[in-house]
Amino acid sequence: MKVIPAVLGAGFVAGLGDIAYACIHYKIASDLEPEKVLQAVAAGIVGQNAAGQGGWGTAALGLAAHFAIALIMAAVFIVVAQLLPPLKRFWQITGPLYGLGLMFLMSMVIVPMSAAGGPGDLPKGEFLYGAIFAHTILVGLVIAWFASRVRNR
Image (tube, rainbow, N blue to C red; front, side, top):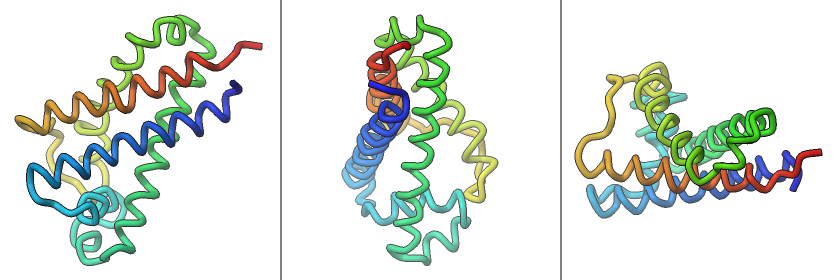
């Protein structure tokens, strides 16, 4: 597999797994509809009030932003893994660690700096366990698996 197909595949599969997990988890835990979950992602761009009032338009923006972020996450790991082969060789370890790092980066830096704002906190209780699962397995491990399939020239 080449780098670009790996990035696209990893970004799509990791993004799909992560957003599906979030929609299912928030529906079960808080009876929150997928539209609201996606609007929460869009809030990072347009702010909380505008996202909540934008209906499916801002939900679509949130979905697009979510997949753009997943593609960037995949591209970073896959490109760096080409330069540092142990990242690919030990993908079962490096992937979940990368996902855990992404969880901290998103929670503590990216979201607080976005238009959504808020404190730089990790989720609490079951939401923390869910975030760890989603980021280590559905995001990090998936991205690292795709990286491990890229052939060196």
